Every structure is written in structure tokens, then in C-alpha cells.
Length: 102
Image 1 (tube, rainbow, N blue to C red):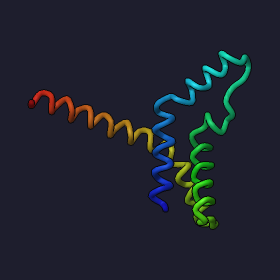
Image 2: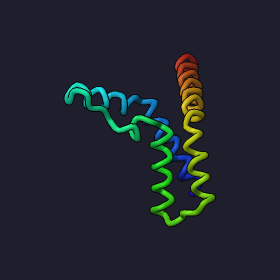
Image 3: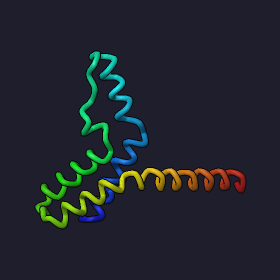
């Protein structure tokens, strides 16, 4: 279950890194003046918190300890993005090196 919660956090970090929510908010703001997406969708911490909390509710694992784990995992969202960028950089260097070798 905790691996699933970590994967939810990584998924949210990847969606935020893609810029999906910013693009969607820009589209909504152009279409409907002075309207924006709710803060829940524009905040990585909030989105991870509610997604992981919903997960433990649906799976029936609601406990005080699991709520604390959800909070900690949501707080780690700022950690995942640099780690994912580092992994991406190393993979790009590996592909570039393979291109020179072959």
C-alpha cells in the first residue's frame, strides 16, 4: 500500500512537471475571463494529499498512522521533481552515449 502511495506522489509530480495544469488554467482563463482552476488542482501538495487520502479511504486502510504517511508523502512532492529530472538527465546522457557507440 505504501508503494502505491509513493507511486501516486510520483504520478502527481510528473503531471506537474509536464505543465498540464498550467496549460489547462491558461485555457480556462482565456475562455472565461477571471476564472481559474481551484487551488486543489494548482497545488502539488494539495493534490497529492487528497489523492493519497482518497486512496486509503477507498482501500479501507484509514488510520491515524496512514493519514500521517499521506501527509509525509504529500510533503515529499518537492523532492520528487528534482530526482525525476536527475533521472531524465542521466537517461538522456545514456542514450547520447549509445548513439555514439553504435
